[in-house]
Image 1: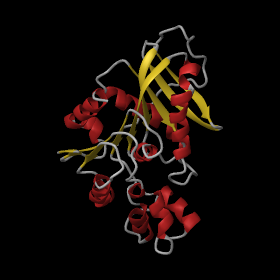
Image 2 (image 1 turned 90 degrees about the horizontal axis):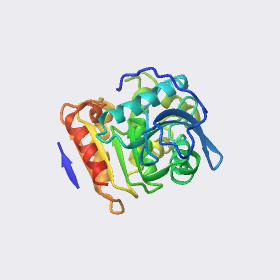
Image 3 (image 1 turned 180 degrees about the vertical axis):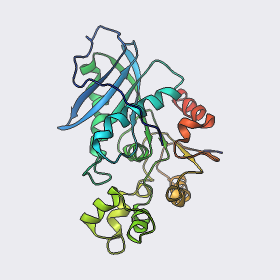
Image 4 (image 1 turned 30 degrees about the horizontal axis):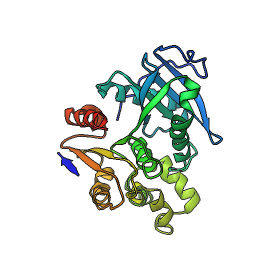
Length: 280
């Protein structure tokens, strides 16, 4: 194990469910497609280079307030990962997973559908050959890829500032009036009651509950000047993951002075990200 010392939104124009290039065409394109696996559907944005054999980076955006902003978040996250990736020969797929009116954590089924579609159906549907598959996620997207790493094997996982780490702590602050209430805790409270009366469901959905059984090597990038809520639980999360006895290799990159988007903003984060992909 090696320990080293918000993303602005941009608008993009996307066409949904358009006809993809023919299988014998090595055309570069960005398309939006509704995919399905085991009767679970999810939209994905596909950014493909002019190649028919590709490694793939499947990425997950962070939290949004409204699902009307999901497509913007998915495109922005795709571009952020593409912007730090040294390679120009990888296909990047960005999952447009829902958040509004969905209890945090329940959208893992959409993330799993996107991954299993890539593993089992994408080559045939897109007319290409998929070789390696990597997962990358920012914030709540980092939460999802960390959880997916306990479920399915890939060639490697990169999680930037993954969270929420501790929903008991976060939602308790809201209940006590110490921070403004948000949709995540409000939805959980409507189903489970308060953290004081029923903390277990909150913990079960926290990333602190998913620190074992990683099936692939994983790189965590965390800015040490992230929000106080994130940093309150980060040392515990890091220690719990470090203590894992049934995980593949784990690497932590901590960015001194770095904030929530350190993977995309720091030279160290970018370098370690590319080294991780290159070595896997």
